Image (cartoon, rainbow, N blue to C red):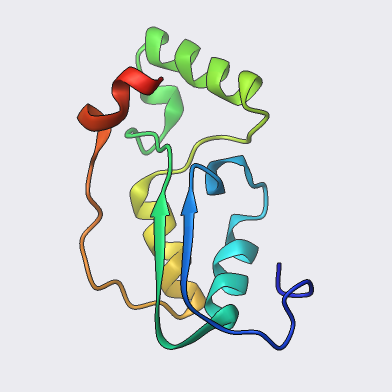
Length: 109
């Protein structure tokens, strides 16, 4: 992303259901930060897991997570806390707490 847009900056990077597919998520956050103008914003709508350790999830949840990984060609789903940590490591300072919009999008899944 950084190489393709070298020299350009943006006031916002907005991604919807993209980051969960990435194997190098920290690289995404680092690149997004590098592409933003000072004071710019990053907006992410993505699919997350709720359990810190998938192995502690119920069998049904583990089966659903495996299905998502297989059908969407993605690595293990991350948690909101993991994404927040990666964003902070890249230099972002969150302005809002993450919002859970599951009930608004469940029917699309």
